[in-house]
Length: 116
Image (cartoon, rainbow, N blue to C red; front, side, top):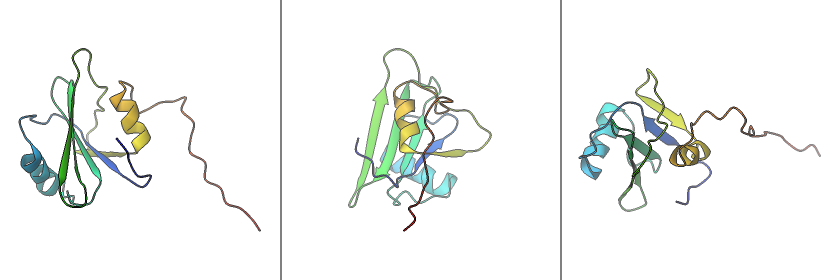
């Protein structure tokens, strides 16, 4: 999945009913999370068994729904007291690969400027 560098990923912490499709998930985003589903950012949901993830996003002229179900194992879905957690695309890739979003040994992003 191609993701722009400035994209935000919102993880809904906790369980989501995976019978919900685009309409139900977009209502969750707007009414329960108080975010705009039309923002172009990604909204990720996971089921109770942690083996299914759905990602909802708006793409110029319509909603897209990405769905992944694991046949074995489970996702390392984070637990938190907050309803939603914001992560970057790098952490999303880790999560989809079966890793935790908190990688202690990962390289930290550098911020620097040039002086002329």
